[in-house]
Image 1: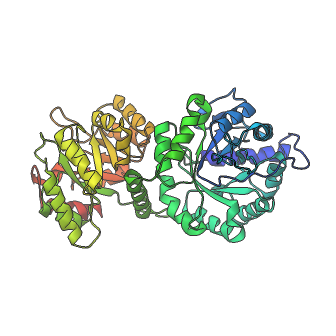
Image 2: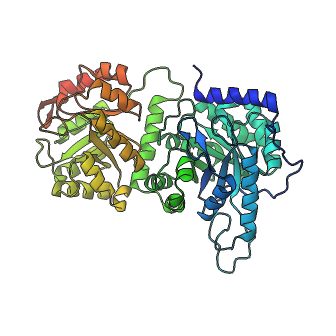
Image 3: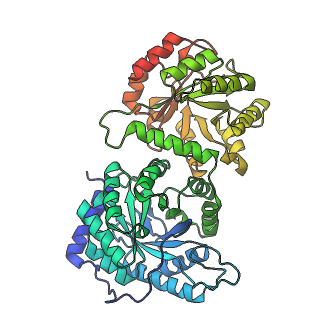
Amino acid sequence: MADILTRIVEKRKLDIERLGLEFGFSVPEKRTRPVHPFLVNKGVILEVKRASPSKGDIAPDLDSAETALSYAQSGASAISCLTEKNFFKGDLSDLMAVCRAMDDFEDGASFSELHCGSPAEPGCSAPKCAPAVLRKDFLLSADEIDVSYRSGADAVLLIARILDCDSIVSMAKRAADYQMTSLVEVRSDDDLEKLKLVASSVDKKFIVCGVNSRDLATFKIDLLKPCSMMDKIRSILGDGARVIFESGIRTVESASFAGSLGFTGMLLGEAAAKNPDIRKSLVQSFVSSSKNANADFWNEIAVNISGQIGEKSSVSPRPLVKICGITNIQDARKACELGADFLGFVFFAKSPRNVKAETVTLIKKILESVGKKHSKLIGVIVDSQSPEGKEAISLAKEGILDAIQLHTIECARSFLEKPENRKIAHYAAVNITSSDNLALLDELFELGEPRILVDAQTKDCVGGSGKRIDSELVTQVLQKQKLWLAGGISPENIAEVLKEYSPELVDLSSSLESVPGKKDFSKLEKFFVAMK
């Protein structure tokens, strides 16, 4: 069966053959409005969207003009208007209505309400500027750029995956001839090659690049996908590159996370269309958020994951490896030498693997003295308000720990309810014992957590139990997110785990010990050999 994107494009081609490039709508012979600059400064693109292939109806009764006005009043820097009929229930009449609404808004807006996406200075005499309008569709030819221009669009979406090299270049050139911006959407190394061709053929002031967190083939979300490509895009477009985080953001908290990652813009569809009450908060949360330790941590993880997997690799990727329960320098050095990506230090008084700040500080100092890149140090906490939890958080703030693992949903909730804590590098870990627990992953995702470690649980402990999660539950987790897996993984079964689940990260502790808190070097070596 063809993937969703292929089905959309095939149906669109049939409609063009039957109805023409204007799809039966009356489009003006000449454009009647000036072209507006597209996303000059950091800002949010809010989308006029009634439905999608993954969600079905989102806002079926949405009025495109009224919605666009609401978006402009909420501070949107640009308005995206879907004009695809079969799967998204939009059309060219929506685009023209949105453009008219923006013209009306521009005529009536005060300087304090609008100034090209940012507040005007007192006494400013610059011309008023409404949000730019993007035609979002699965455009296939340069002639469709002409239709978009006459319909009033200021920018067009060019999806690299569905366009060959000649087409995407000719379309971007046509748009630039009209002073329109091309939002070039990429997700793979092949897409980046097409972006290079566009960048060498068109003035870069007319190019914005977007990375969709949603895979248009499967419609699954990965919040780290845009991060993994940001540096590659900037190497092509230069330091001033405008890069857009597309899709997957649903809440104010997740908008803040996206805003901290260094993107110029964020494109929001479903969340904005369905939730009028939080539109302004979504915009403000993204725009006001700045880079922090948590953003740096996830940007680096995204690049590492991308580097290990590779877009064109035909072999199974080597997952990230976390060796947990480290209590001494000998074990830390051995795990680091063998290639562990993370070393886990347990800050929990009831655990036989509990460590003190002095030990972790010394280990950090010794590992750094070697002069080579070493494993990231992760503090595992079960209670953010306990003395041990506070100690670990303090070490993270000092830069001794690279991140905090919030073990148990209760710990994650307590930690994340304080906005200042979200700036500390962290990720959550939850114990999965039944299908009912899977809702916890959705809860954390809504808070902007891009990865959640899943672990087994026994009656007496929440980690380091040596017990595996039921296979069916792991499969259900995989349907929701990339897999970070702990619980019962060993040198003996790692090959089976990799083959069955292709996890992105594996976390081991008790299976590599001679006694709790002391690693067995022969088991460590056996594990890393088995990984290959």
